[in-house]
Amino acid sequence: MKKNILTYMAVCMAMALTVFTGCDTDAEGVVYTPEAAGYSFASTQMSVEATADDQGVVRVPVYRNNPNGTASVSLEVAMDEETASIFTLSSSEITFAEGEGVAYAELSYGSLDNLGATTRYAITFSIPEESNSISAESSIEVLVQRQLTWESIGTGEYNSQLFGQSWPQPVEKAQEGNVYRLPDCIVAGYPIVFTLSDDGQQLVGWDIQATGYEDATYGMVYFLPTGMQRQGNVLQFPMQGLVAVSGGYGLLYSGFTEKLVMPE
Image 1 (spheres, rainbow, N blue to C red):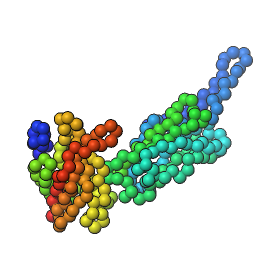
Image 2 (image 1 turned 180 degrees about the vertical axis):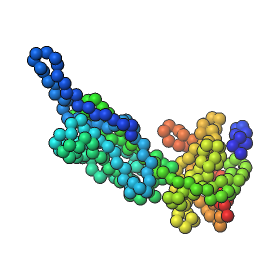
Image 3 (image 1 turned 90 degrees about the vertical axis):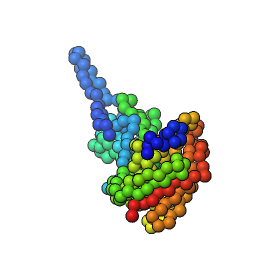
Image 4 (image 1 turned 90 degrees about the horizontal axis):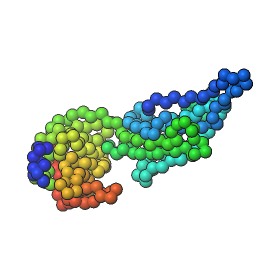
């Protein structure tokens, strides 16, 4: 199927925080003191797969180079509007107890069902310059994505009005919710993932997803439905075919419907 479509359409890394204290070997015996207290992250990027065991919280470690005494540091946080509607920072001020070299910023997202099935959320934390550790990272991008456990529920049929073909389609369902995946749907290596309501009658989640098909002029084509109609085990998706344009998406194809016959 994957080859036919092309013909049809166009053809926490570990971190060591060391306080350097040393003596020279002359008669004076000069002792070099450590740098002023500073704060940092383990790396510039941290990837998190959210699971039910996390209880709706992502913990981001923040380090200090001197564990003596109590201390605190205020973080700067940046995220887009969609991410901000889901994630809440418990406090931008991170507090270290006596003897602690690491403390945690906590991001709450509530239920796992609040996360899109395929969405990757990006949150950037920064330490103000006056609080930086001069020897380590002052900012980190935290990427959060829902982890799902897929189980096969059988083979149905996919009928593509855009591509003018139909084929047997394996269907998988997540153990964690009413989320479905169509592996290798349009092109091998590109699954389609969507979420239905608890009763299975409404489409409640479909992130913009790459189909794997690349238009000769505009590049990768993405699918985004405008809704869903269900009759029995037949799901029909009035669909839009989008392409990436200037940091967003533009409409390339419209007025077609993709149909999935769910396994019996």
